Image 1 (cartoon, rainbow, N blue to C red):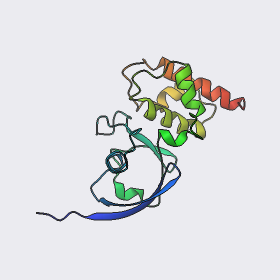
Image 2: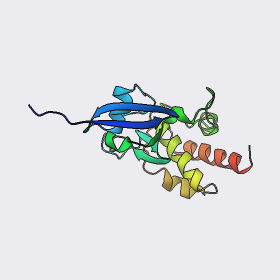
Image 3: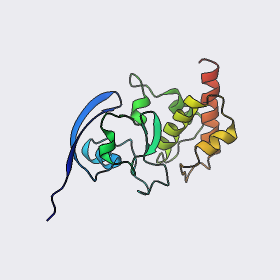
Image 4: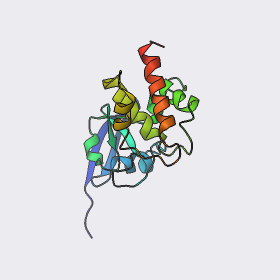
Length: 162
């Protein structure tokens, strides 16, 4: 029987420092869900094509099913829960609710985190640019229009300083 290679990693998860020993072959997704119980990260296709498992790694959206846990050492990871402040939803999360962009909720964390990261870099994005930015996140319920409405509304609010 082969011996498993273990690695020691230290990283920040939603503002909290974590230090773990993990199997080198484990993914960020499996560490978050199975080892840390972070269930706001969803498991979808396990191939990096659906966007369901998206998290922010050092501020950039990544498919956590494709990132090896060893890559986390020294990194900063943000999940949907990490956007909330003082137990209150982030304004982008609130926009999703107001605009009916949340139905089953399975794609929501990936959509929100991807939109959040994109708008930080492109605050005046057009609807078409937002559509392209969210193209890697699949939704089977809303038909995307309500998601784009929510993201556009949030972008307007931010640009108006609300």
